Image (cartoon, rainbow, N blue to C red; front, side):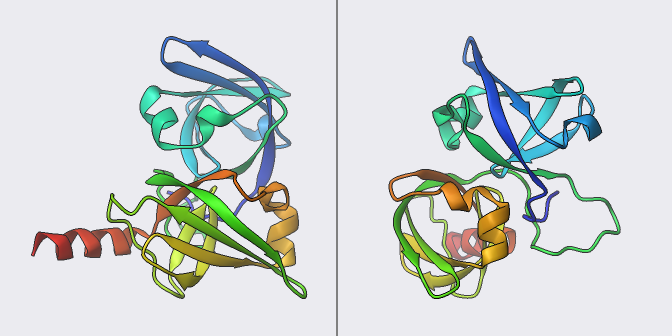
Amino acid sequence: MFTGIIEAFARVNALTKEGDNLHIELESELTPELKVDQSVAHNGVCLTVVSCNDKFYTVTAIKETLDKTNLGLLKVGDFLNLERAMKLGDRLDGHIVQGHVDQTAKCIASDTLDGSWRYTFEYDSIPNNITIEKGSITVNGVSLTVVNSYKNKFSVAIIPFTYENTIFKELEVGKIVNLEFDLIGKYISKLYLKR
């Protein structure tokens, strides 16, 4: 389980294909604190550390993960948002995040406001994922509040701290992001569709 509160960045150092798998070697200030078999969210995708040393660590994304997330679009030098799994008893500062990306979305608008930023994302509504105004959404692993909600798009507002301490500062119109919809909302939607 995660909270959607980003701890650090990781920079992609190397990408190695092996069959349908992609091994991603990363460099981060968190690397010395990581260990093999630990779960870490990368742009909201829960991946297992398979090797690490003082400077670099490696995770592996399988075909299912590459098909449903933006990790297959990574290039050497790209940055990712990182969050380690929450500790039992810690404060839940964001919202309950599983690290299981539901689908991707495209950034269709980026607006600089007076002291904040607003981003709008469009996604395929076929999987019946929904957002609600003032509800929670995870974008590239960041726990956010939905500002405007429509059938297959939504907007979020970004405060300066979040802008500076996540990869939102590099997000441009046309970029693909990972979405994890609110867990409670997903259950309610599924129950409603069964009626």
